[in-house]
Each structure stands twice: as structure tokens, then as C-alpha cells.
Length: 78
Image (cartoon, rainbow, N blue to C red; front, side):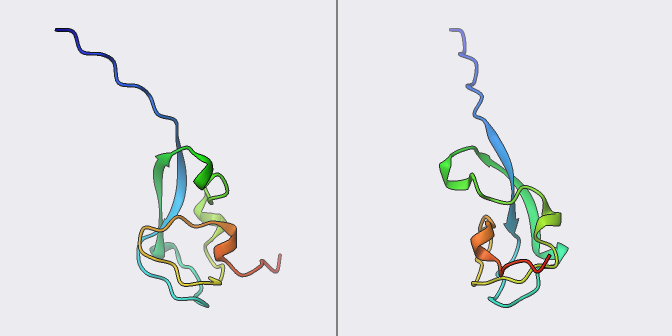
């Protein structure tokens, strides 16, 4: 019996929390990592580059393994 080739599912690298982060905390490099997730509508606004979140302040509590998106952070002062 011949095996069918695995379907390739498109993925996207997103920034996720490696620990719980309290609202008002400044995000450090040790608090986040990149993870490949299936590309879909739920993560289209997720950050894909850790440099975009390091040094930013959280607006809400962030859970472990939660994907980070702009609405989780205080507005940038840049």
C-alpha cells in the first residue's frame, strides 16, 4: 500500500510568551520566543519579529504560550 504525501500546511512564525507576563510589564527577550503556527485569520496580526515587542509594555496580562499581537501592548512612543 502506497502512502499518500503529507499535505503541506502553510505556517507563520509568531512571537509567543514563554512565561506569564503581567499587564504593565516591560517585555524582555527571555520572556518570548518564536513558534511556527498554521497560517490562518486568527494570527494575521501577530508579531513575527521579537524585535517588535522587546522593550514594549504589555497592556493586558499575557498567558504562557499566548501569541502576541499589537492590541496586547501599550501604544509605542516611537
